[in-house]
Length: 332
View 1 (cartoon, rainbow, N blue to C red):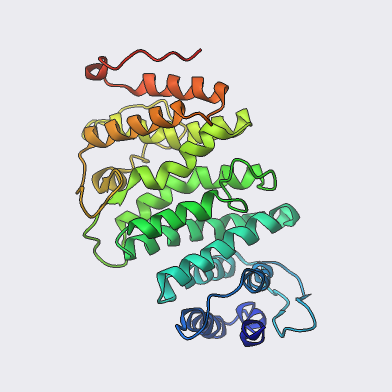
View 2: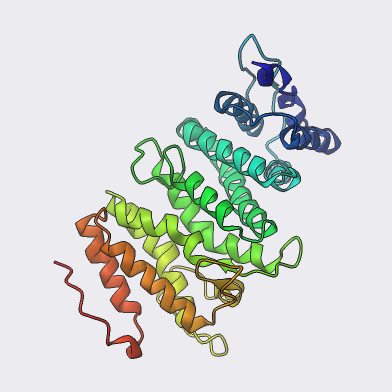
């Protein structure tokens, strides 16, 4: 109960069209969430907090109960520049919070709110929420970079994305397909941007197998053929095409991505799982470990039979000639 009464009344200030007012509210929220003297915000209170922030992105007046002063103000502007600024400022809270566990708790609250509210978003305003999702995907990667890709934090991030209520949970029917599609479409692009422009020089490579595992798992377990195809076309094939490409002689690739999407920063600054012990893997080694991960996911007992056959086919199509000594795969 104490946490509830201590939540600052930030909704109406985050909804302000004045940047100084929004900046002050964001700093206040980050300070509140970073306070080591406070216990972690209970799930219900985080949900209330995120409900207020969420509706700052839409034209609405919302009261979140008689026992809280978190009131959402009337969002007065739908101008693109204001939308972009607000989306960026809200996402940057992840990096303004001084505690990584607290940042991850805030991130979990964001994804649970997005999954919960997505189906009710006005179609005329869906673009601003696509933008907000993009900003949070990027900020999440920069947060993990700031934490030097710590294994425990990466595991927590994967849990946030794949647990029930997460946007890439294969077994949660509440997760809107369009949300998972959008994340797939932007995931590699935003990871590449984050690695290209870190807030501070990162001495550790990105653990690519860990970061991609939510999509490999979703591809293995989704009952939707459309979802599987989206993951393959937006994540799996573009990355393996980039790993197979000659950056000195760009060639036409059978890929839905632009030819400029070489993901060179990902490929030049990644390892498999442990960024503190492995060091950067070269392109061929990185492709090999990702193919092994794909094969292992396809072989798991929980993988759907139809998806297993597709993943084995992808694995075979991306194998190098000198890896032909692998045992034949029975995809029946």
